Image (cartoon, rainbow, N blue to C red; front, side):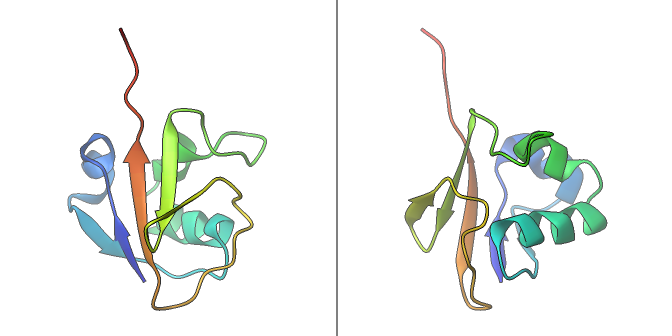
Length: 85
């Protein structure tokens, strides 16, 4: 499946979009971490939870549950939430 990578994580991938596999978001991030070491830690914390500043969209729908099932033709976007004042 296609994964859109935010600019803050492109130092890991070297690309704005990459291919990955996985039946869930957790499996997808495990695959991405094998290909691009360190990327998963920036998105998923030690308790297997999505970091507060990260958003995941699957086919345009926001998803917070990392056990969310994925299909091979899904489009996944990793988005860094902006904060500040």
